[in-house]
Image 1 (cartoon, one colour):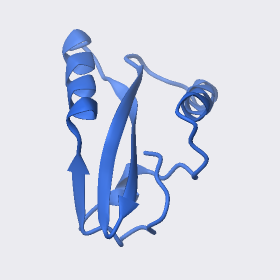
Image 2 (tube, rainbow, N blue to C red):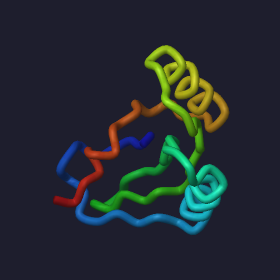
Image 3 (spheres, rainbow, N blue to C red):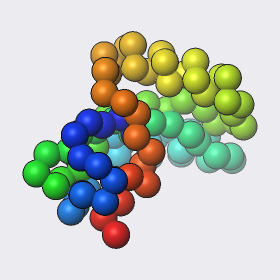
Image 4 (cartoon, rainbow, N blue to C red):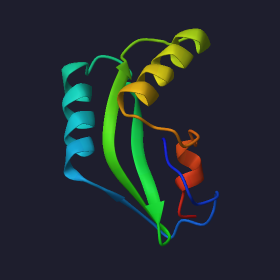
Length: 93
């Protein structure tokens, strides 16, 4: 997930808008016979992590070099300058 602002453990709740939910659901239904891998894009403010968009990347096994290229492309297209943070950092537990 790409986000900026909060450090791990400082998120009180997570909110997902309709668009990323629909994108993830449709992509996983279209490729239901295997794994679907993508990126959730969001931000944090006031202890709330808001997921604004989703970018489906793979529906097969991925390698580190290909993942780096895919994440770089996402950063360029979505104009993300904040550091990428693993989704676990947005955990509410």
